[in-house]
Amino acid sequence: MLKCTIILPVNYNDGKPITTLTLGYCLDGLLRIAGGYTLLPECIGAYRMDSGIVCHEPVTPVWVLVESDKLPDIKRWCQHVAETLEQECIYLEICVVDVHFVRS
Image 1 (spheres, helix red, strand yellow):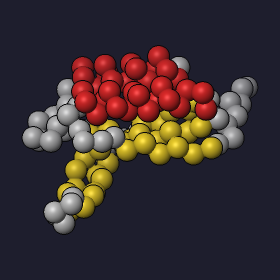
Image 2 (cartoon, rainbow, N blue to C red):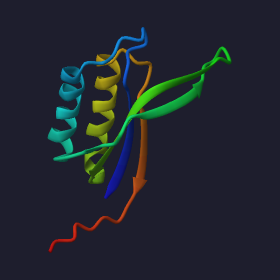
Image 3 (tube, rainbow, N blue to C red):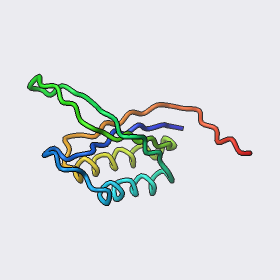
Image 4 (cartoon, helix red, strand yellow):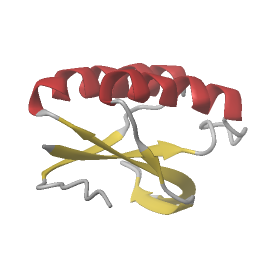
């Protein structure tokens, strides 16, 4: 099982907020691919641009679990989201995990 951490921007590059409707549209794609996701609380991310300027911006992390055969779909989803949200790229971290759903 793979755990994917995806970092989504809260705002477009011009500073305008990404609407709840647009975010929901994007997350629906994850639901179709993986059957579920976990949307984590908004936090601040920082990165250094090629010019050397450091940018701090609000981001929303998302966790999703998939089998390895779904990884190409997740990568295509990230590409689509980058285009939809007018981003240069979307952060995608992939870790092999051992997950157990413990029932009562």
